[in-house]
Length: 157
Image 1: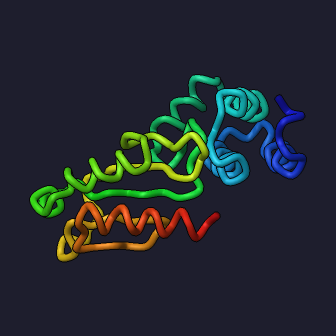
Image 2 (image 1 turned 45 degrees about the horizontal axis):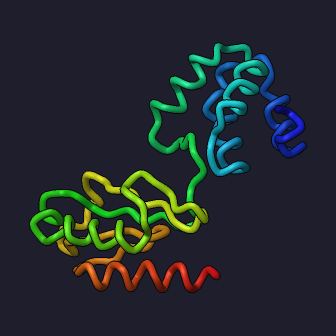
């Protein structure tokens, strides 16, 4: 396993060897480098920090900002809050699922995009709203949402 980790990451983990209080810091570094935290990485981190794999896995799966599968280069987050729901978020979700060929929580096979639904994005005045790579897009229709995703994917080619 260690030979698949970049040497800079191995060095970072080694600096924290035997220090279980560094777990979240080390997991953030693993995710920054690999894009997600694999079972192999969990095992290596557990071994080096001196904690159980179950403990590491519990931390990884507890915090929603840690991912256990590869993520897309672009993240599309669609609000499902009350205002967005009333404004047609379900129709937008269906259009995005059809365009990307994935369901919420999934990543396209080419790792171009990950689609997520969230309880609220805190932008009710813009409902329905989605965030693509950190940029808010509001007053959406299914066609507008698909056009934004298409433009984002095209720009990154």
